[in-house]
Image 1: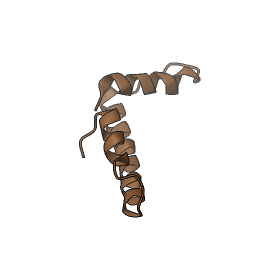
Image 2: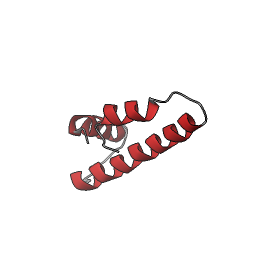
Image 3: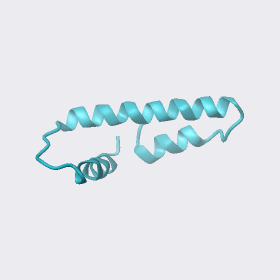
Length: 67
């Protein structure tokens, strides 16, 4: 997983929250990887219905996740 993107998204998510948050990097990495893979699965289902056949690959490449 692209660590820079991971931390960028985490910073955005935490920006509006008050208080200190101590989320382990390992949890955050696994959690976001699962979300990205879910998005890839939705894209594949879209592709199977005749949509853009590269959407899932674009998602994987953007987030640095292997299928």
